[in-house]
Length: 99
Image (cartoon, one colour):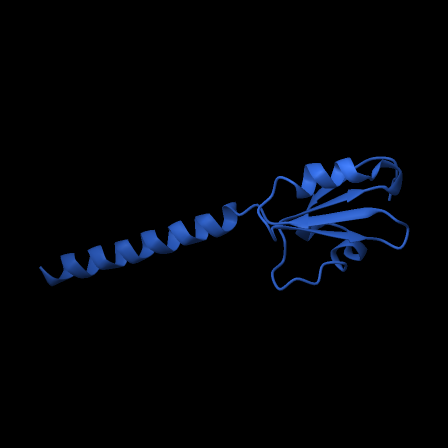
């Protein structure tokens, strides 16, 4: 893997050795790898400081590179809306079939 640049992947497309760092219950949506030479407090502020609490996790590789994994929250919202729409549609079908 090239060093010296920040890399961003969908979590499912990230290298196995980076995905293995995540130990959370749900698979994240994205993964960012920041080489040690580019890391620092400002990177943490940018990546960790603007997310919802618990939506981004930070890990460090044995080489000192930083790895961030996270959820956008959009997926959960879309699933909730889809389930509400499905329930509403099911109720509508039941009502119309009774008539």
